Image 1 (cartoon, rainbow, N blue to C red):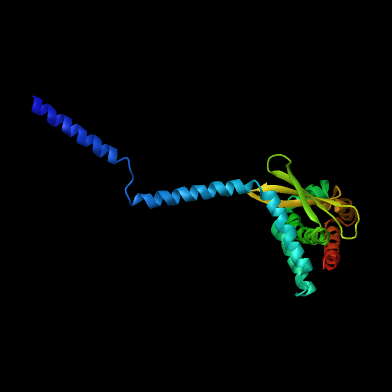
Image 2 (cartoon, rainbow, N blue to C red):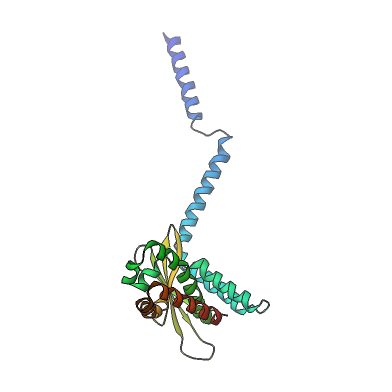
Length: 229
């Protein structure tokens, strides 16, 4: 009985040791675990950086604009193209037509809306480039970022003109879509750039209908694009 009992105890001890060893990963699994851990760390770091998204977006926008404006080694047409690219890459005007046209937007059918969107986007891109190019460079100071509710944020900046005039307040309004922050409006001394055109575009729509609105937008695009150089 004693020997039998000893064999049982030895067997249980051996099983316990084997079970304990199974708690440790095999050498082949360790590299995979390290990769998973590093990937998780990278995702967490990316998520942490996401909190700085709005400020980073504004910095990139004004940085690209400044490089385009001050690069005298390229033609004026190339400078203009780079300024427009800076706006196109960092702005989202998808909701702007609704706010600009008001009740007129509801009067448009789907075909008219599809025709309007690229025309209005081209105009807004040139209009914003024309304004923002004056508020980039050494005189720019990013003040802070404030949340405007879930998925919305405002980055406040101040620009000090070189002629000694009073600083100009430039606020960038951003919206988060699918994890990406995009600028949808800019206000200079509390005046929205897009809002400046609301009354004029509504008047063009009321006077000439949809065709008149398109002609007015195309004319404005030509003018603001030439002024943006």
